[in-house]
Length: 384
Ligand code: B12
Ligand code: SF4
Ligand code: SF4
Image (cartoon, rainbow, N blue to C red; front, side, top):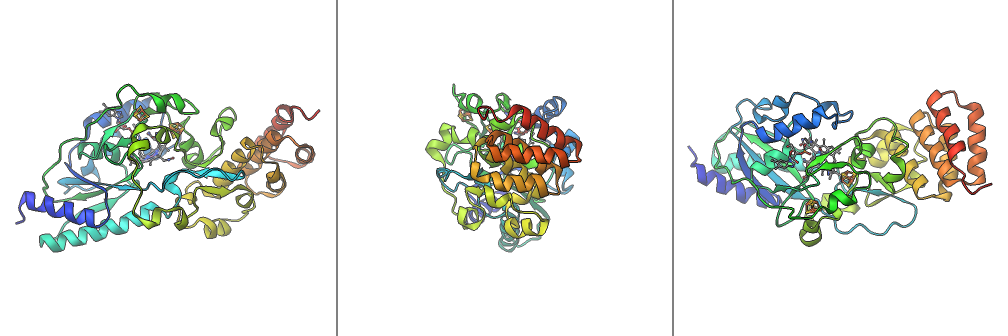
């Protein structure tokens, strides 16, 4: 039988060797305070259309609902910070840092399995384990806070005093009894920058993000329209949003560059999408060819084109007008046609208006027709 503290030490060593920046352990017991906050969040409707976040609190807050035999939760943190966001070349749709490289689910899972295998070898016993990151129903931030990885910032992110908040949380649920860590502690002090600077006012109270307003939700998880009144506030973001982390003093001082090459901009889509090029993607095959193996597949082809339409409209990107007009005429998705209409209204050129007027005669979809009419009514200020 392996000794309690020896197993903990071996875990720490192997996890560091595997490239994890943070490692901590908590007992596989219900996360009661987190569960209570989740209940209030769900009841307020803040989970928007994310059905997986509407599952019972008892399920989402209990690690043993994922693995009955689990005794400990090993919580791991890995920095994805690729560095500063470069200046927009002028025609780019901004991508949140966590998504510049390869799909973190796959990349991290591989290392988690390797870590488990190494632990089994070193400890000389079979370990029944479940390994995951961001893919199962568990309050990962709460578990990580219990395991000592950091404290909750007012932006609701888990912040580590040494590396800031640009890190993924990954978990190994194991049937081993491991020595638990002290819970993470720290404070935002009197700072409220994230709350003040969130463009949509999504941070409703310290640690409480209303997903219905959050740009990250609107551009990634949301499968429908980006509400018209929120579109101007989305700015140039085409996938996710980093503002409440960018303004955070902990990240300004402490953000530590990731040492995983898979998360660098060169490994994936990088910091900006070429809006004009994305707007030309017409098939799922082409989309998969361009973005397969990166986190950008999450909203699907139509979702990513929708986002690029909104970014083009906000950038008043006249050079994207021909591509937007092709979306309006040819795209099979009403979501794309509707948002292309909005963007053309924002760009407000003569060719944009001509295209909208022509489309108004052809469009059969009721929602798209409404978008076209509203674009003709509300856009084009200053063209007369
Ligand atoms: C749903 C979800 C989202 C939703 C909702 C986000 C939200 N804040 O709820 C959307 C799509 C908006 C989103 C956005 C992002 N997400 Co997200 N998301 C998740 C997911 C799947 C569940 C989060 C959740 O349970 N929300 C429900 C609410 C109630 O919980 P919560 O926000 O985590 O808040 C808890 C704590 O903040 C705590 N709390 C807050 N204040 C206080 C104060 C006290 C005193 C106490 C005791 C507790 C407490 O209580 C809550 C319950 O545990 C997790 C993965 C997972 N399975 O956990 C990733 C996760 C939270 N996301 C992550 C990331 C990276 C992001 C983005 C940065 C991506 C981006 N750049 O666009 C943004 C950040 C936006 C933000 N400010 O939260 C990481 C966060 C890592 C970290 N260091 O914190 C996670 C953990 C994924 C991972 N495995 O790495 N996300
Ligand atoms: S990710 Fe962006 S929109 Fe969401 S809470 Fe943070 S600043 Fe606000
Ligand atoms: S910006 Fe300020 S208030 Fe927000 S999480 Fe960072 S330290 Fe806390």
